Length: 262
Image (cartoon, rainbow, N blue to C red; front, side):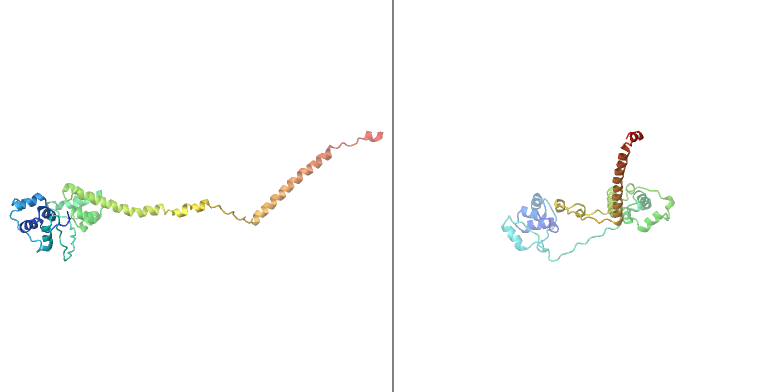
């Protein structure tokens, strides 16, 4: 069944039952009604006193389509395309109506919302309670004429709004705060480097690394290297001199008695 329905479907069904030989199934599907309801219209048990509306005069059907459907019961009627496209007018939701007996409770409800749900915008409080922005600002700044006598009271308990509406506005404010915090958290955490810079490519992993060119020594390093070499040469000469002194001390000297006997 199509989603589009004719204007005044019951009146259209009455006219089709009285002026055409269409089957009940065709009329029921075209008008979006139950088959038994269409049979009740034909029997006079349903829609008594309702005047039929001609769908041909209103441009919803053509005579050729009705004639074709009468000849073939399997054919389903379809609404004719409108000649003029009427844009849908979106009605702007105005402030909530508050009964006269509850209007003196609105400042108390505003004070309760400001204390318990500070994340709500003034526009949200206006939708919930039906107050004005200057009144909200006066209650927030404690400049309201009745500020000393205000007592915070739940607007749901006062009957100014439903719990569903309050929960919906609170959830909406929470989503807005979450979106505002995301950029701040990203700046605090810093930006991450892309994967292409942190992870080496497969070709770089498998390819052998080229040998690094020898680095030239600085003058300080060259001087230190020469001094270390000289110290090593000095240490090698000292053990040789000590061995010579040891050999000289080990040879026996000739005594004076041996020289006399000679």
